[in-house]
Image (cartoon, rainbow over all chains, first blue to last red; front, side):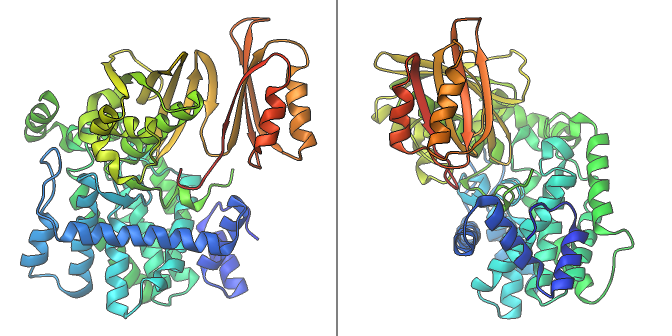
Length: 289
Length: 223
């Protein structure tokens, strides 16, 4: 049994050797860490999934703006008017924005890995389940795989915008989700790792620069885009496309870029989009009142 | 250290921020549990990013919700300030420009009847928190393990007596931290155990001479 998880490669190697999905290893790992049984872990994971789904449902039907007025209503709009994307991509985009808007309205969500990035995983995962004719119960094990990738990122890098910018939040969420989608679609442990690498590579360097320091702009839409990246990365990996840079090296790179990133781009609202003229005037309006 | 997957996926919480909202609920909740009862009043000082963004993140509502005994996923968090008023919890908010070590920090002086305590806590990201001082004793209480806090006279053998009772009851100590204000004065001990502390053990610990107060904070998933 795994008592510590320090690399995605370790998960791939053991899962491949035992001929089990990565989620099986994570289920055993969590039983050890939390000193509990499989059913408790699975039930808690179901509880998280249920919360994720209701966050989407709540968000997609609401035109209500958040308390600050900075976000809300875009999922509703896109659900009605979106025309270029279709199928699973359109659904992932709208789901992710919806869940993220629910978060902005002080609704109930499941942090994954944070509240700020809590739209990505539900967004892409439930859309893929629809596409593949899977039930919500089928998502329980893939979500465990996502969490396992998150454990590695937490170990080798970080999962907080304040420490590594948005690449550590939406970037991590996309990597976790891409891996989960691959497992849901029946891909191999190796493909899970490839998908995580491809997703994270394309969000490296993303700063955390929220307007007025609040989890709304640009966070809500970045969740939507993050879900699309996760979906694309999973689709590439399932087709056999591989990342030239292995997944653990990509995660280490995320850590290094996060450390090199100026403090103004790490959730302090003193850099990036947060200091544009528009953002500053919004900030004064919201925080000054 | 091995991290639970539910620190990565989860907590289930009221948005919008795991550090400014869920973490704030937990700081309030720990303050309430350290006091040992629902507070009747609280003076809450916000520092750093808590001070700057508390309105947009609902940090004030979240801290209040925690003081009222709610968890991060409680739908009543949004209305916590009104609920506090109805339940007779008097709140006084102070915004401080003083620089603190961690960006998301709150200092809460709270009381009920003749009991008053002051705790300071920080939100560390992802909903994880740490109480870093209790009545100006430096501590590190995270709520992520079964936690026992004793306040006792600083005399030889006090740690041994507490440890012996835990050992006699097959309770394994995972972490232990001791602090005091000055030699021979009061001391505060924080003990994390692998198992929950049964009520009988609490009584036994409280009957040790020179142990003045005891707080037990059992760990629960999604607390």
